[in-house]
Image (cartoon, rainbow over all chains, first blue to last red):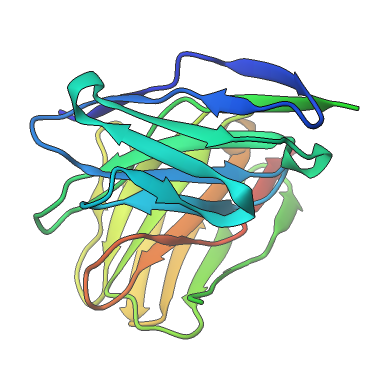
Length: 115
Length: 116
């Protein structure tokens, strides 16, 4: 069974500082990988996704993520955090094939941005 | 981009009431929709997969008679929480995948259900 681990429950950074959110997955093959962001009381917005190809993926809002097969990781990064980035971030995986292709989410990382 | 509309955004009702939540794909046809439940400060847990024209597939531990899912068209799936009780209070989110079966899923904005 596939699983996703986000080891950091809560991260606090100062505005303008760099950010890295960690995500590790467990799956037999390379799954599809996603990062979503959720503001309080809202649904999920897709930041970026990795299916194949270039292991460094660019997303919206200045985010990027790097897929590292050897480490089964897909960490999210941003060089300079803005106050509006404060939110909950979820890493998710889905099987690359098959009829179900349902998402499995990590437990989330709450990001707090200090002024 | 693909838009999923979820309605209502918030419901407050008395215990014993049945509540219906709608999930619509606005600009694409969704053969598959997913229903998730999210408790405060927790991740999304898949409740069921809704397939157009067929019965929904429920995850282990989810009562199908409690959470009725109907996916009658390619743009609409509904989740009805029957005889809701306070323990059913939660944030419910739907997502939809387009007819091509590709990723990613597109999420609605969620429904905050509060049972008094």
